[in-house]
Amino acid sequence: MGIQLDFPAVLERWPSFLGGAVLTLELALFATVFGALLGTLAAVGRGAHRAVIARACKIYVEAIRNTPLLVQIFLVYFGLASLGLKLSAFTVAVAALTINVGAYTAEIMRAGFEAIPRGQIEAAEGLALSRFQIYWHIILLPAVERVYPALTSQFVLLMLASSVCSQISAEELTAVANYIQSDTYRAFETYIIIAVLYIILSLVMRAGFWGLGLVLFPRRRRLGTPL
Amino acid sequence: MGGHLNINHLFFLGHGALWTIGLSMIALVGGGIAGFVIALARISPLKSVRIASGAYVQLIQGTPLLVILFLGYFGLAAIGFSVSPLAAAGASLTLYVAAYLGEIWRGCIESVPKPQWEAAEGLALSRTQRMIKVILPQAVRIATPPTVGFMVQIVKNTSLASVVGFVELMRSGQIVNNSLFEPFMVYAIIAVVYFAMCYPLSLLSQRLERRMGRGRLTLAPA
Image (cartoon, rainbow over all chains, first blue to last red; front, side, top):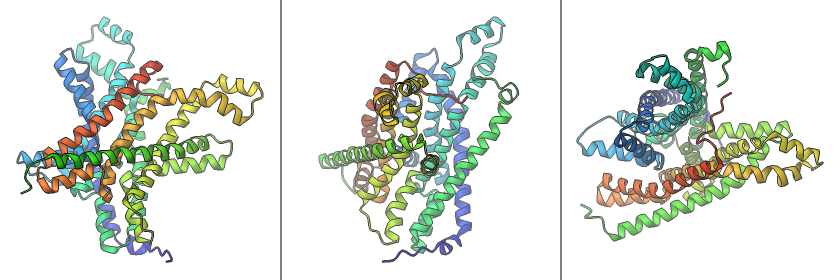
């Protein structure tokens, strides 16, 4: 049997593909922002003086990092439903992805915190900076700057992982592809197209993070500060 | 409707868990062999080989595993090659693992200190001798903790094989749930089983890393 590929037949569905790609990007964006906040909190929490908080944060991080995203998504989906909360698939997807990426972000941020030289914090204390000032200027910002490349990779991986949300019928790119291929019977072409779209999306995200890095950390540009 | 969780359900889940381990082994061995070739190709003296292997890594790392799986299962079937779920899942995971392990191992090979390369060259070892006798034995030591850490990713990613109908742990959980209609309980059990498989690997990876006296994450942007 000869192989006949018919890309135009699938490509004429481009508005659906575009809609799916936009929704994937939105999912990734929301989960990135919330996940970064959650992860930073969890990383700070792991260093807390109260043992209960530190332990809770460790359990959260280890539980998430050692179970598959697909299982987490189903647990959040059915868990929220059994609590009687009727949420859209998109909301559930954002919640599950946030919980997931928060744990990975926490690990990365913790590595960043640990890399801050002790002397810097002592110097800040000597200069009578408040605890908040120390946390913000001496620990948090330099730590983020140091682990920024790792965070970028993690958030790009998150965007790719969001394809799993198609399993709870969030209408993102992979779900759109599943729909189109069952409609056109052109599975091979459809999945090739979304593979290319995912590669483009990951390049777009990398470029976005690179640009954001230039704005957020001008010091590196100005002084070429070695990290 | 479906009654209660009984011993048969647990046996079924256990059977699924064994297939999760089996699929992980297939992915690890297949991906390991292919990843080793990728790692060597990435540092090849031939520019075309370097570019081709680099493109492969970028391509795979820019595509979700789920899409690779769909392409292997539904895609190939649609153009006339019928594949079993096991073959599709095994092949997709192998391609996927090869790209990531290849990158990890390239980093490990390149992080063998430069004087070792120079000394081997100074002793007039050929390129092959230098690799086998000097660089790789040291690279293997560096590579062990991140490889064990990546095995956690492999085990977790096998859960995606469930979407093409391969009955591993996740899929067996879905089947059990279809008869019990207790999704939260069933998926919680599944999560615990995955945790029981992955956490020892995570701990082992951390312990190996600590023994090597290296940081948990290699963060070297500069």
